[in-house]
Image 1 (cartoon, helix red, strand yellow):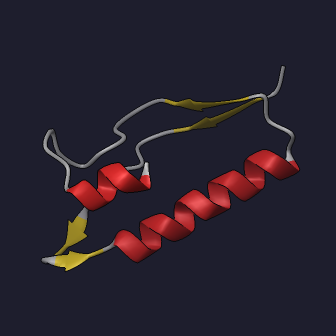
Image 2: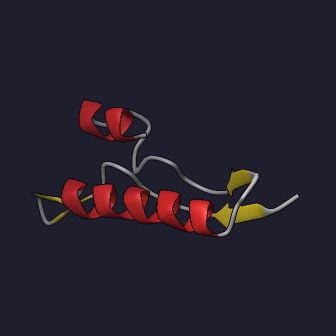
Length: 63
């Protein structure tokens, strides 16, 4: 079994009030690409998926 281990995505994080959603979309696209290339059977996410306990809807949709 091939496992791709990741962590601390912090989807929904902003930087000085500016959205980082585009960067986060690029990250998810890259994650999918790497998982496909490496023929991963599973993606293990250890850490924070969202940046807050009440993430913005866009971050939830991205996941």
